[in-house]
Length: 509
Image 1: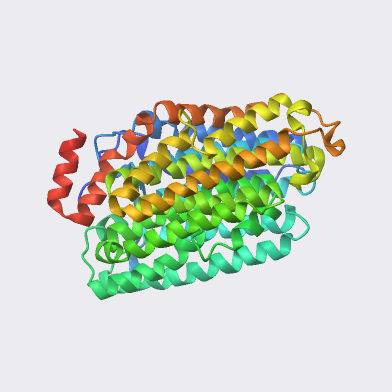
Image 2: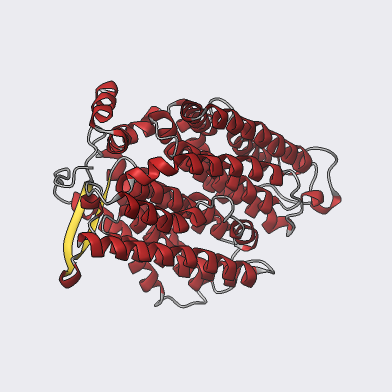
């Protein structure tokens, strides 16, 4: 990343990210003045705020310069002069799609909670709006101090979502989530302080061009690894995720699956690879090994699950193993596949959790054994769930296929054994997802779910955007990979030398 240049910003574009971060926070504050008994007004206000924010960030998609690896839509203002801290935001080809995904997910979370959340409705939607602002802040921040603030700001409202609106064991799950993520974040904070004391700056773009001593790089790699690996979550620090997913309300599970766990993988891309390149290359074999273990372990554990949400939660451990495998394959195919699969996983698993929340609202059970014959009872719902299931197993023409294909190709290029073993994860994934679908939707109709009604128009509208993305990315992925081509090439050039960088850019052109 060239520390001295950013893309020129057209009039008004420098405010796009700031508005996207601030608007949900202002909406959350404004909601304090709405009577808490006016549930309908609160829901509509939250929906309008999230839709307005999505409209506000559309220039990121329509006006983004795909030929540039520089930071775009940049806004930078002096904040705390004594410590050289700035309000500094911007996006490149690696981060831009996550801002858009965050804005979409926020709308879906508001819609899916329309009737399922009946207690403390105002407080619930305030938490959703605050989370949206923090999510976009994480993917936009270019100052380490600012990044850490947004990173931690996600923790409190998510803790409240799980702890207040979660299931029977919500307090245990919320505290476990808090302790795991906070412990990793404290170690990352020590790393941030060490970098500042060494370089005198929190400027992430400048730090990407700063060569730190090799021994310091290794220490910092593990300090940041503590935070990022927990968030992914990588084996063996993954155990908080199934509990959090299982106990969280549907909106909480969707945010966890679609956005929050992506922040760990994004951290590796934004910090570990460009700032600690020597350490990243040295530790790549270890990271690949942990990724492959996560892929296979997560898949095998899914085979023994009896709870719908818990099965999908463990599938995230397996799928995110593919993501980290692609990132640390340190080649173009694997890294682009890893980034694309982060988006894909958010779409697919977010869709699956939305579906589980919809059927749970009707049946009040997540036990797989309590279902059966649901395709006869809820045929439209069964069709949506089938699409997300096929995408999860990587059926060609769905987004899951494109991401996993690129990752396995990149993994095989980096390490043939890792490539072969990761491919077995695809087979295991097909087994547990298709077996799940058979048990829930086919066989004889279980009397416990015989009277359930099919999904409503509101619920269909909630699922349709993700359905469109499943096929759009699956059939025409270049629309999305085009955002990241040049940025990934430049990152690889940073890792492996200027000659490789020049070759990659020439190849893309």
